[in-house]
Image (cartoon, rainbow, N blue to C red; front, side, top):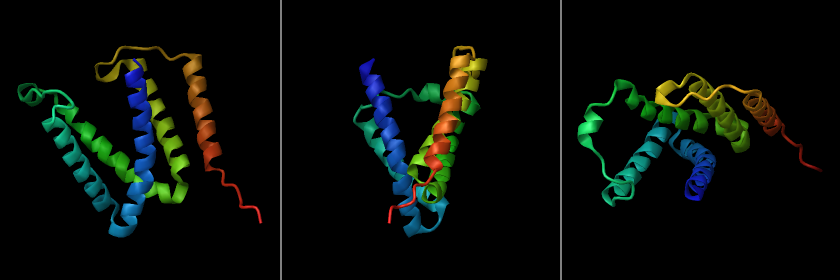
Length: 151
């Protein structure tokens, strides 16, 4: 269990780090779409190397060809995230973007859990979960507040 917790935490660090790096890439490339394309191309190469080395386990191409059509939209959603993050991070700051991304993720995750979407088990909405989202929205608001430098 600790391995998965650590993996998720490192994934969060990667997302927070990715946004400002991609924003700097955008400054050089200018186009947010081209910047996202470069980012995904490098990511694709990294995933291909991981696949070749057996890091992620074997793939079943027969099963891939039989998947429902909506399984393919994960890549589109990931591309939109990279585009949205690298477009907004230079205006909002990394902490604000990451906090808003987390709020968006939790709102979507709450809906997914509540309705059992995408084959997930149903987990009812509770007052604790609603409070958690409210606190995160408040946290995102607080992250947006800029502190003026002391002169």
